[in-house]
Image 1 (tube, rainbow, N blue to C red):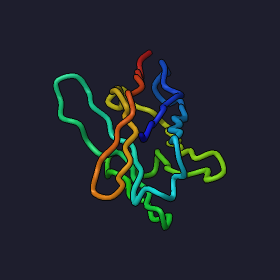
Image 2 (cartoon, rainbow, N blue to C red):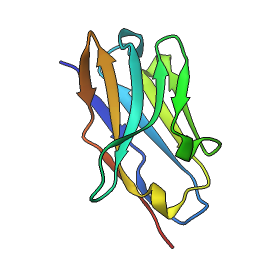
Image 3 (cartoon, rainbow, N blue to C red):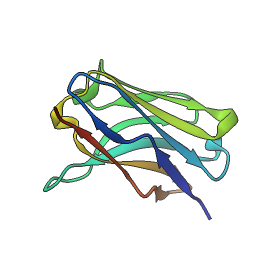
Image 4 (cartoon, rainbow, N blue to C red):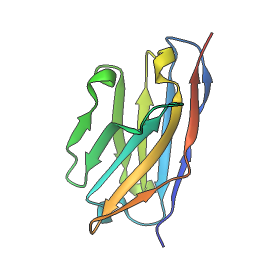
Length: 115
């Protein structure tokens, strides 16, 4: 049973930073891809950032230059460093992992950017 546990969300002012973490129940290298998605109220879930088991990363255009995805294999954890946050980054952020053609999701963590 795969479990993904997210942490690090919260309330931050515009221009601030947050770091989200996603800890998997097994080795992160067992997943072909891990990543972060977000869903704002009334909007569809969208990809934010992904990292493959070979370390290749992909970022949505809206977050390039502000967000970074990285991994700590020793802790089975993937991080999303979010800098220069904007109100439009407000959403529930979900950790995702893909293995053998199946998607796994975390429970989500709320990020609110507001003054």
